[in-house]
Length: 304
Image (cartoon, rainbow, N blue to C red):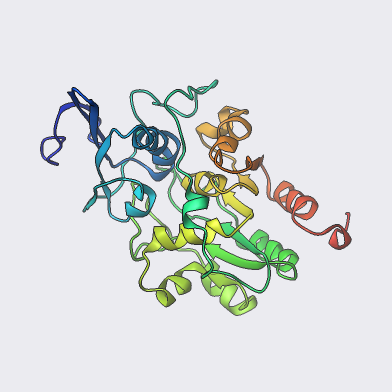
């Protein structure tokens, strides 16, 4: 794969997802890299490694799937290849994020919040982002998703205090790279339009700002936000990069088997600003309680 992509140097290749190619010369080492794994693994393992190479002046070229340019803004030469993302993990230095304690050597998350902070996506209330998904997970029906009754209860609770942005990727979204988890039909967007038209839907925002692709616009939104609700997966990693508070609904997956992962690894993504507060919940009732206690102003909290 490395040669087919035109990468130069002595290459290490992993599972047709990763290439790291090194050229040693008198002034140092040049690195060319390509990655086509899942977004969550990219942001946990690959991006911090190649950003560290960038800070050392070694990174020369990167290649990624459709829509990956925004995550690789620091690359001096990034190319998008027409490819889906696939189920594979990280670099030989940082191979698996689920093993604790994590190896932080040569690991430096990119400062996405600082880079993408903007005056364009500003609202009349503080922004709050709700991430969701509804996909097959490990060839089984969905488990890590916010169901519609819980979603509606969250919106009812939060909309007096926040401008709510709802993000659940649609397969046809401009600049969105699909992976091996097939999306399923879900009635969330239509329900929100009908019952809570004031909620901002990301797919509608993407149509409005046609000059930006999915990931660039998403990162710009996150850079202006300090309150996140997410579910297990890449979206939870993205939200944890931007400091503030991120509550993650996670009931099934490797992350749920390592109780320190959300508290240990995830809070380090925002190293270029204050550390993120990342809290995992295991039930919809627990999600609602946490949001009620930690997202609402004190005078709005009603105990049950």
